[in-house]
Length: 585
Image 1 (tube, one colour):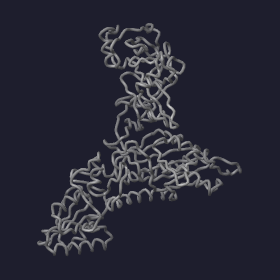
Image 2: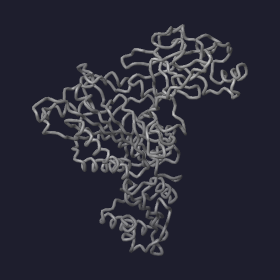
Image 3: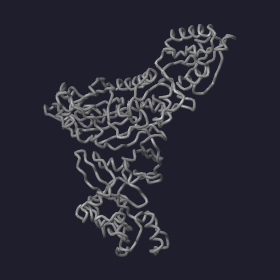
Image 4: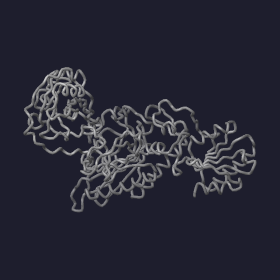
């Protein structure tokens, strides 16, 4: 790869649309180029890195006996209609029509098509177990594509699927994939954590995510000191034990003018209604009732009320996971106008519930114990009710895991407390069970000649996303610092100066290194200053940099380790041997 002819343009300034440090460097160093929001071109250097990541994924999938196939990206509507996902995917699905008016889609994931492919070819338990995979371009019409390769509308994913006769077989396939994923992410080299995850619209009985730990991650996860780890969407807060409310006074409605927020209410309570036990009222004594409107994939709208302690917010991601495939949105003034029983800012349980005046389904956070005492809205402007007891004075239609999780909360497994961290989703594995096979009629004859529904697993790795994760974890102020296994070249050789002898020596070293099967990125540009060449070498981030320049007059060349910054001079006649030692140890 000669930089005088390489399709490459480095940038000195950060691109305006890039948010994350690694994303900025991938663009500046000429690895990727933006085409549209969430859509990127892979340039020659970037494609080399991508192919190396694909190679790791392919090796580990082949190692567990999975077989590679390639399915189309353009798919018919009917299979997705059969499983309900033509509708459930909502606006995230790229829909289009062919010239005959037939509905088509760009594949966001391929459970349906893999299922039909196996159905077309296999009919006996003797054909199973089976694992198939592909490395394929996927499409999801993200509302807010961001973070470069981490949340694009077009992305490259490895998706694999296991097919078994029963749950025991599925468990074996799931475990094999899980072990393969551990090896994949160990080889990719970034810090990651395996967390319990919510299956969401995918369905299934078990689900785990592989998250790259990063302050820039858009996923929040929790863990404790005893090994529990979960995505916040999957945290199951246990139902609080019932408490004795026999000593709680009867509920009392009080005037609380100008208190539409928790803060104003608490201030008013402490001023006008001090507690008998002497402590101050806090937000934790109040019950906050949050209204959202659920937009179903079929276009219908359904209101929902969520009750949480007043010192907590409703976590949007936790709520989304619980109501999927519906999408929750805040109540608007028009929505309030449609439900006159709701007193905005003073909403209480008296109006909420499917059999109450507003007729809105009402779900409580499980931390709200039966017998617990609350201050909450009295369903009349300027009024709140004190001493309202759950189970005595009000009930709900059920519970929902939607309140925010906070640092220091008790771990759901009963051991220790939770810490919060951020991560980037790199892989997700599901035990799908029979959901898709049942919908599409994938059955085989078992050993007794009886038709049984095949049970499936689904396993995804974000391949293009992994490139971004490696970049985020391997950079410094000057540029990228690739791990050797994923660098676009083994050596970046920089020839500096105008002396022809420098370029002659550089050519000889390049030839010697290539004869040893090393890949060399050779900066042979004649009209570029040494300073620009050095900056480009730092920016591009090949782990070993060789400089042939003014030291050649003394028979020396320089070898630099990009990560550590260590430099050493070696005789030019030993250059190939010394670089080999540097690269191969």
